Length: 80
Image (cartoon, rainbow, N blue to C red; front, side):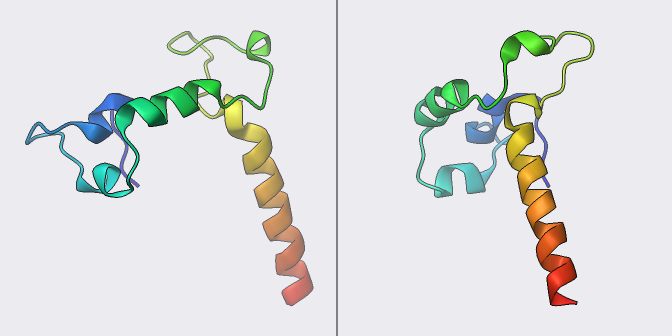
């Protein structure tokens, strides 16, 4: 997993921060940022904003993560 200090760095053309994969998925930085800012699955008022102490970067999508983990666990037990 590749982690950058800024989302914009994934589309950087600078030789130090360049990541070829981001450009290869066919989505521009502007389109991704527009979708990313509109993708909310949790109430933003319930947690501190980004950059604040106690901020959880996965908070907006945590319900999806929880559901997928629960699904994987339930299908794992059925398949064993």
